[in-house]
Length: 156
Image (cartoon, rainbow, N blue to C red):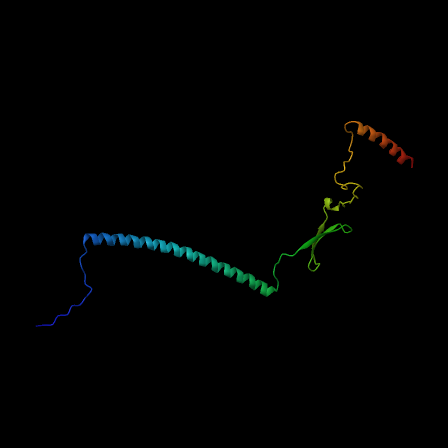
């Protein structure tokens, strides 16, 4: 008698209708997954393109700074009014370099006059200040005394 060994081999087999339907659904799912992956790839590719573009821009900026030895920075400046020359000078505060000058405008030529604050204003909280005619007898009494003091002041 001959000796028999069992082996497995991959061979074509006819699919049942259910198996064909299952394969059809699997094909549709694969196509949907492909569309999703391609959309994700497009987004990632766009992100990579953007990152590369930003990197190239930064490298170009650095190259210009390296070549020129200069960098653009925000520096505090002053607008100085030169009344003698009738000019407004824009001056860097870090090294006092005059950046530009221009003619003063009319409103800039108007000097501000600082008037001293009248005595007694803002002093003594809670004190009332007589600011005109009021109601009643106190005002009449105040009027008499004010007339006397005014006369005394004008006499001197």
